[in-house]
Length: 423
Ligand code: ACO
Image (cartoon, rainbow, N blue to C red; front, top):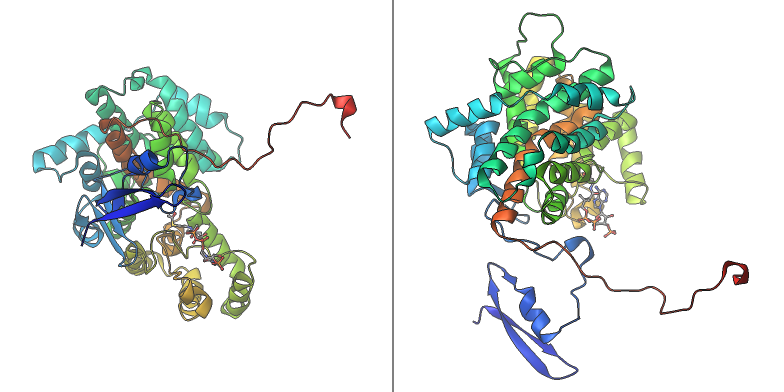
């Protein structure tokens, strides 16, 4: 059997045979036969916009691997910082490499005082922390003008470290400001997760301490959110980066894409949905309203997964461990019942709609004391390592500027009409 497809232009009878490589066909071959005829694929549902060696995803089988390593093994045995190294460098670190990486990240957590005083504190008191994060990531580009030297691998790596290290500081700064709490500086003696929680929640204690089960749960959530191949925000990073914008501008674009409720904003939307449902008795009415087209069951469905999202399974288990420390989130029972109802309902079954990564993550975050507005920010903190890995890969592939075509459906040529002659 030939590993190829043949396309025939029925207008001319001409054909072209295109080999199937890595599960895809090369569009440049297609355009040789059909110059000026575009492949119509709004939302890129069937377009491979890149070749990538970072993350493997099989949506039918529910498989997710970073650099070949199954997500289940990474969630059980690794740490977020090790996973970030793996994504960025392509291999797991040796002990020396890991220690050096941790040191680098730890020593780049501080932000310039002007970022805090002029940007973070310049926002209105009730600004959404995700809006603050998007803007302050973009603002960082003005503090590191050398970041424009994107062809220099050492300068690139410096910005990668800075971004991974500074996102928790920016995130916690946004939270503290919105609560009217004083900014907490990073503490280099703490590990990545505890340092973040300290910057978020420390009040007057000498040193912030946290139950290791909670920091481990947060670490697992960060591992699960670190990358997910060509999702909306990663695509935004690659597209903006393809214009050779500096990494801070590209990451701000990615964070902006993540903000939307159909993407990273879903975890916040899930919590609000569960709060609105409020009790068991309202679940059937809520499901009926979703089926009638009045809103979506947030945290359900995925463009790629057509079975249970493997990340959702891991998160569901992590949730129980967190609740052992914090006490059960009262919304858990509603979430479990909602899931059971949906998974037995023909509407959801026939559309292959299963819980995604965000169905349970918000319950954990809320139980840990994070306000709902911070949920998408909590997604962005680890996802920046995925965005940066893709940004770097895209540059190393000497990618051309992203520039899709369109099918024009507007008016044909017509003459300008003076305003007083328009009806
Ligand atoms: N609730 C109810 N119906 C849904 C849902 C949902 N959550 N998701 C999809 N559907 C229905 C659609 O209405 C459509 O039905 P139809 O065929 O009768 O018109 C069918 O399922 C297919 O849906 P599409 O919108 O074509 O699926 P798409 O791949 O474009 O969307 C998405 C994927 C955006 C994730 C969608 O499932 C959704 O909106 N889910 C809720 C938001 C969410 O949880 N987002 C987080 C995704 S994971 C992440 O980004 C981290």
